[in-house]
Image 1 (cartoon, rainbow, N blue to C red):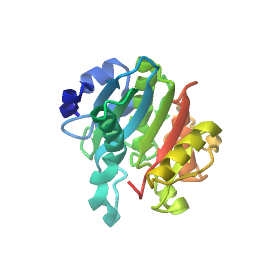
Image 2: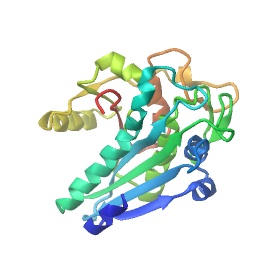
Image 3: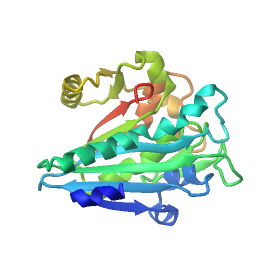
Length: 259
């Protein structure tokens, strides 16, 4: 990310102490099990006076699953779990290199989801910068945790006109639409249409899946659970993220499988 400064991109990197100070307990919590801890990496390219477009990216540099450790051979591929952040940063780089007349900011929640004596454990409760508390029912559902604080930061600091998050979020998405489509979720029909048409032009096909099943995220001890009690997993994950979009026009793109 720092290399993009030569193209006029402003880069800032927040470390665990700063994340704690801002109340970003979800992002900080996911990184707690690794020696390096979590980061929030922000890449802002401003070549327009319009309100920015914000892209929030999931940047899990390795996903062990934490204490809900992955037991499938797919664990060997979990360095790809930073693909959402890579897509967000790559978008900013392409726009900056092309000197596009846009205002765009990538906000990337970065961490390695590892197992140690410092790791968050299932049953713990984390507080997000949004102010919502989350009961951790599965620490392998960590991507939505880092995104919750990244999305809040994008909204709070940049007041974007639109917020799009990109993440390798759920196996359910792969089971629903496979690897040839990314799944897109939003309540804004026009935004869905714009993203779908843009995807067709560059052979990055999107398929709309529904939002809903918010009742499956209810917790007895916190505002939300980080996994649903039943219901389609890709949708409950998207509905979880919707809590952190506020009033901003928002879409979630799940790129699991086709990352």
